Length: 230
Image (cartoon, rainbow, N blue to C red; front, side, top):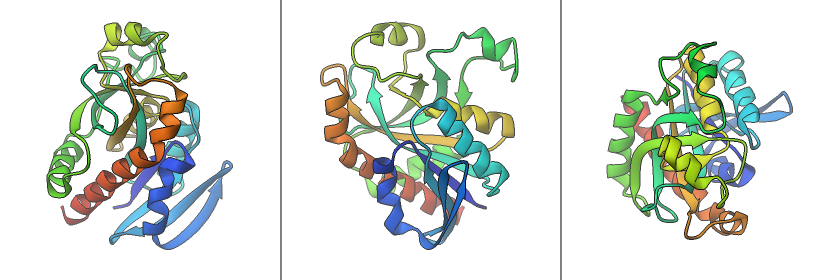
């Protein structure tokens, strides 16, 4: 078993770096892959860069080049549900694109039954055990995430909520889930909230990114521990 960990940015990835033992760095497609162990579990971790395509490139390389059998997406997100607060964490049950026409995925490759990529059920259950074990800062909620190629402040927020009712929005998760779906690789995302409708904007993301990244990383490592003993 080997677990791939994908973060979007270097700040989201930073909490993992000191944890990777016997680390070997490999470069592919202008990305650096950090191969080693976290608490005895084999991992290959990296930050992919922002946006769906960058995340998809990293995901496919993790599968094809490094042979990962699970992918975890760890990082930050914007809160979309009105009751979410900054530093709450959402763990994916399903993921969708909010900026792709729905028939693209259902009428054409990969001919899905719906627009939602579902997270791995066993990983969801293990994440509940992990969260209960460490009791991280903020609330942890399991639910739907939406992905698109823009930072959501105020414009377009209500349209996304009306169409998809996601808990969070980000720019990578569905791209990773899409790659995992077509490769039949188990997937889950762990995203901590940096900004909300009440506290929106890039400045809020930048202000809260470091702490939110650490919270998401702590849950990810706790999940790795549960995966390692299953």
